[in-house]
Image 1 (spheres, rainbow, N blue to C red):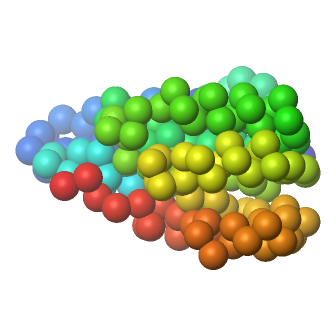
Image 2 (cartoon, rainbow, N blue to C red; image 1 turned 180 degrees about the horizontal axis):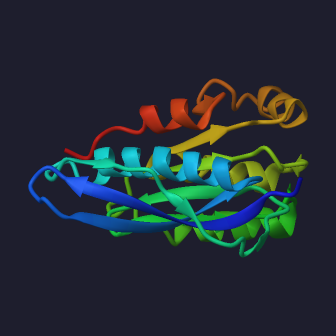
Length: 181
């Protein structure tokens, strides 16, 4: 089943308010249930890292219609104003690696809590792609998930394994993003 960009609405109830608010975000998922589950997890951690002065809890979300297929990698960016999805290609070759670096360079490290880069659909990476990640790794607090074995081998060969933040699951990566308090 193809992965799609799915808009999800998740209700959030803040401790200081009796009224629930809605958080709207887009997630990459294969099914509506997976989209809801992923969205709830992302919102819970976004509340932790971006809005620690106003604690809240995420409720059960609702997936809307798919927007379209996401054939490549993607990254979740945790910004104070919300969660954003960067759609990326499945190959980080010279041209795409340069675009990746430019996309990461455009992000303000003071305005985001972290980035989770889902590599599950990544099929190729060269030195330009490696540089696009490595150049912004610490500045943006980039965490990688679902790294395919062939890509992990490239990271290992070039010696990046020792300083990359690689996690098996989205939950593990989200828990590794520090609070902004």
